[in-house]
Length: 322
Image (cartoon, rainbow, N blue to C red; front, side, top):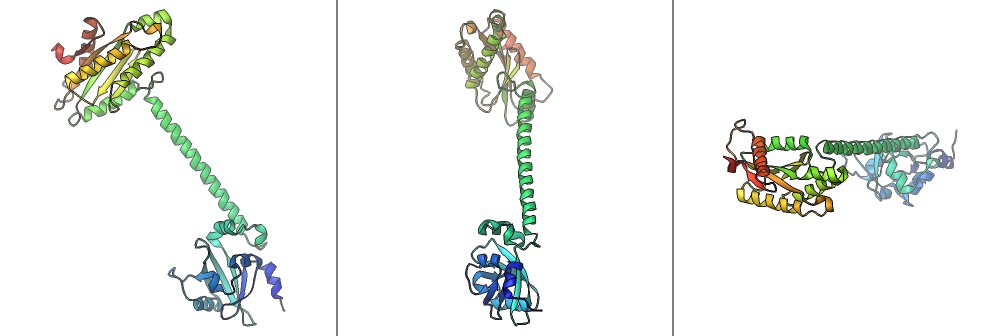
């Protein structure tokens, strides 16, 4: 039975027929586009041996003649590899049929291949579709995971943030306070308790919306006078707590607190802010004190109430009460 070599062009679009010297006698319509007009296989391809290194063209021809597989790397595109199996023909030629394998996707993009460029029996395009579908699924899964991560981070942030003022809520502050107590040997700090003066009158006269604006402005006023390393919390109602790590110097802390009070007293939020001030109590936690021998919150509270009892709009420290 005889076959015309021209029949192979359509039947095997990825075939190459070579003579014993490696000269290309004929090629399928698809591989012809990849060969780019080269007359010899060694001009278009590098033969890759078992060790992953380039071998001589004679080694490739010998493997084809012995019916063994060959692995080729396209010289013009180092990212495209082909694998094939060859047999010697009765006419003394070598017949090699090639496929892309894992390089299918870059080869299709590089040479604009379509389903018609492959044999009807070739599952290359089906594998490509599966590969692309898998990529799309992984991409969507990655997007969903990123979205879930962002939602989880948002939820975690919301769980420790006061929604009105954007500062820490009491839960977030308690976590920060616990860490501060654990590290107080290396990083001493001060606990500051602030309570707005005459705030109830704002709610009673102008309503809760006006009161909310005052609280937001007060949070901004406090934040403007503390460092980024310090922690600010709205403890509830019109009370704020501050962990001040930037200094434990009595004079520096008192100076910062007086500036906070001045900012609050001069807030520009309309007539409802008139008369609003703040009282502040300070308790310093120096290093070297054993946990459980004192209650820092009670000390700050006691100092705050002393500030209120002596006329409001004032700053008091625990040490002044001893």
